[in-house]
Length: 262
Image 1 (cartoon, one colour):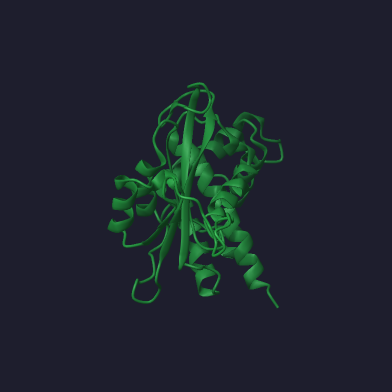
Image 2 (cartoon, rainbow, N blue to C red):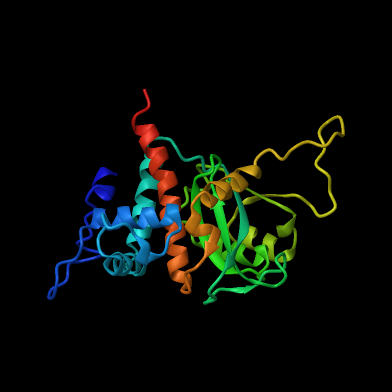
């Protein structure tokens, strides 16, 4: 893990330029990208202690295009899994919308914001809230229509179903044929709140959901990153890339805690 984030080797997925200027330091570029993620500033407003903003932006786009961001994310999930820090048994998924100021692809009228341009991010998490997959779509795309692509986008290979029974918790927005077909295709045990159904305990009293809140908490964690609250990236791949960095940071912190436990 330290080799990844403290001097990440990108010889295979991001080889150096054969001609022209030498590329900027990978760690310095990553620091600048994380600063932009947390602060939400424009690329050309990066502080002077970071490398040139154009170089940082080019590096970020190249990493997203070449799959470097996916590799870092997947490596951290695998390391946490080896340390016993990934609970595959109970998973949950949900989506959240964000404003999109400058337009671009994967943007549509937000039905909850007077049809202003917006985007939607759909996230799958494991039992402790660690993000396993993320996809984006237009704000007017129903959550259930993003479920299939979200389950397909899991960053690492799922454990064998013979070893771990895997449940998927969803809200009422997925109580329809589209949502259930996606669950059946990926062989999950569904736990979907039925439309019109109240959650009651043995005394027939309303109680809070047991596991679906986990994904909502993760969406709250991601919202702490100001670059995700409002989408200023016109290219969907750039917005998706910055979300992947946020997901990677969540796993990095967990991996650090597990490595230093005891």
